[in-house]
Image (cartoon, rainbow, N blue to C red; front, top):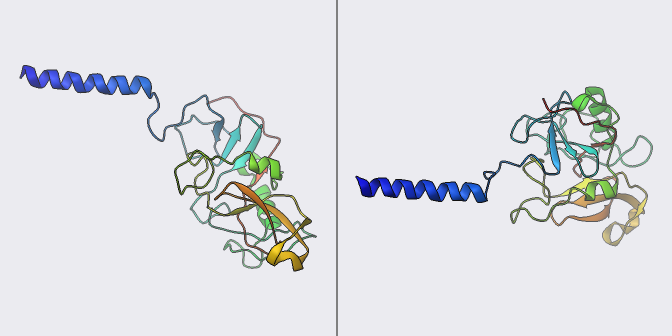
Length: 212
């Protein structure tokens, strides 16, 4: 009996020591890091709470759309051609929320109508803004992003706002396209407007609310 008690005490001691050295359990983000979860009404959430619709970046003061797997307009599997209403290629993507439109312009329009996280004026990010999300310390095979905060991120190209970029190689005959950031390698590339690539919208006018 005493021997068993000593074993239990020893195990508890080891667990307490581990907890002291590792205060946050795996998958539980600390509260003082870069990212803050925001719900669909624009309220700040604690790091372990959910669901969340956006993520605020304390380092850049930008608010980011969070992708889902619920087949809404924010589903992470949908892809879009690059189109701003005048320039680009309309309706060349692969999404299912509207039969005749599947491009970046329509996603932006619908997201602004929806008032995602209580806001309109969502837009495509600049190259520099989107590159700020690249994170190379994840697990091998994961997309190069902070996956705990940005679920449903795909290993592929994500559009930026940079257009009229010269194309090279097999795409050279198409003239110009737009810049995309690849979340496999965390690098940029210029690809044709007609390509079906992923999108993560950004907002630059969000004011961080008080924690509820």
